Amino acid sequence: SVEFLQHREYVPGDDLRHVDWQVWARQDRLYVKQFEEDTNMRCHLLVDVSNSMRYGNGALSKFEYGCTIAASLAYLILRQQDAVGCVSFDEKVRNKVPTRSKKNHIMSVINSLDVSHPADKTNLYDICRAAAETFPRRGMMIVVSDLFTDLETTLKGLKLLRQRGHDVLVFH
Image (cartoon, rainbow, N blue to C red):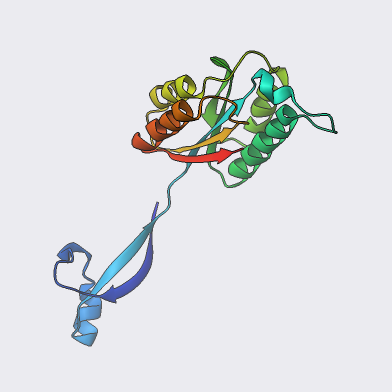
């Protein structure tokens, strides 16, 4: 939706369609209406479930911390009435939850993370490439990983997501 934000004084080059002619009639000065666009965010959680995520000798392993972070973020995103999806991966995609914005969708994300078990190695570049192809619409990609992989290819994968117009957030 688009909502009125404020008036500002006209400067040469502004689009005349946005001039508020009623204000001009009253004040004999040109003012432009500014609007704020309110859009729904599409967020995709990419959660690493590789063997390196098993590490941990305390209350929680890295895998359990990562799943807790992903579930918490999914909950917050859904509370904002935005859409969230989840992909768990190691060398390839292990589990995928489609992007939805219904409040009860949190259970799908949690169940997806619950059935994932750490295995194999991480291949973040291939996962980023697959995510860029699978989710062509601009959105936010949140990567939850220990990043135990080749740094150069990891950065190349994250750069690919940015080039496709996605906002990228990494939890390490």
